[in-house]
Image 1 (cartoon, helix red, strand yellow):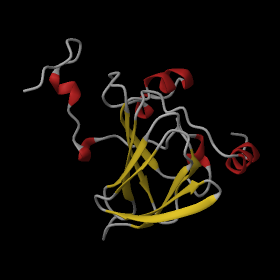
Image 2 (cartoon, rainbow, N blue to C red):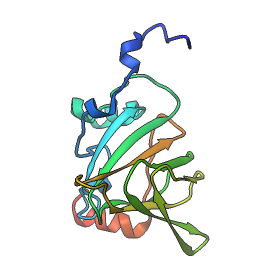
Image 3 (tube, helix red, strand yellow):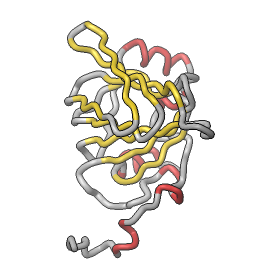
Length: 171
């Protein structure tokens, strides 16, 4: 059995997917865009971001520990997702269920791939990547994609066209 951090009882390090709280993503401005609407669960990480924005308890990480990375579950209906964005660390996206269209740029050339359950894509630091839900599992209104970011702080930056859309909404 792996040793536990001294300041965290083991029960505070366990999460069960069916019990995870969902929020409207107050930490991510892009989730207020019409095509970005969805819900998220911040499992671990994002501590500095939550403190900076004074977010409500439901938007804070479930596991309140600095781990050196962030794990976020994003839940989206078909046609919604995250617009192109970039981080200063590696971001790995894992399709938990449903199908997802992932967009990224190699130079100025737009690339796409479709991720299905268990598929992954990793964006290196500075690479623009975005995703959009295509389908949901039978009987469910949303599908889930997991983001693992190689830093405690998401440090999100958007390309100019996305920034303009955010500013037009006062975000």
